[in-house]
Image (tube, rainbow, N blue to C red; front, side, top):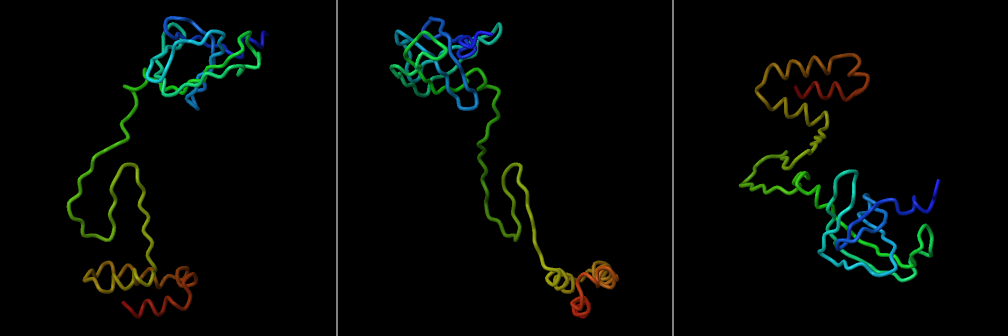
Length: 167
């Protein structure tokens, strides 16, 4: 196995010239060793061969470093580092920004947005007080039955009797 070929296995087209390089999709970088500096700058679009297709990459930033390869994996001395964005994938990305107009809200619990989770914490005492204030006989009956349960009483302890008195 030729390690030099693995160092820069991908082919990029910069200003009509094919150059070997390496792309790190996670970091959004492309490294291209060179002898004669390629004609590329911020805002340009380069291409990467991907099987039978071409991927368009928009150049967001670039750096030309003389002696940057240390001749590792290439016969070229210099290194071109590009920060790129995949232009080909742009139409397939979901939009992350939304405009939400909210008038007036009068509530204790409000949720606005996408993919949110809402967690409500309430004490047992507050739950009992709120149900006791209500006119819902069924809720009061079920809560009373719940508080009289031996397992619930053992978990809550002596407080269960005080809570039952609120009902």
